[in-house]
Length: 160
Image (tube, rainbow, N blue to C red):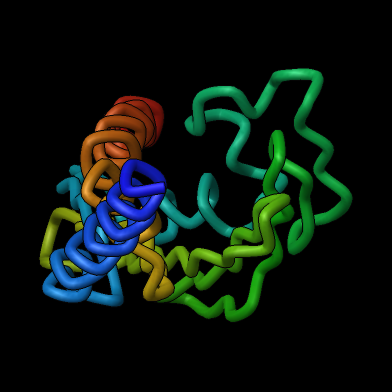
């Protein structure tokens, strides 16, 4: 009986400690990357204006698990991607996974003289559960590398 009580109290204390540490982490995680492209903004928009145009620079868009329904709606692997806002300088998409946790992706096209800066970010709101908060520390390592590779491909395709 003492062993069971000790195990139960230890589990509660560990959960409370993990929750307290998790609450020290931010409830919103933003992963952002940018690239300077030596091309006019109009040329960059040819490749970014609509989900159906991403296949030339986003890795995996040619995969069989990707279904692009139209320029504003797609199923990319386990994520449903929906265009929320689209204008000349900003594209906002909502990425919803099977778990229902949405991520907002914002891509900005910023003309700066003879170059165009493309800034791409993913934003996710994290719940209070300790495994959600602690797991969010990997977002930059996972998403950041993918974003850098895709932006590099966009740069090379656009500058041709």
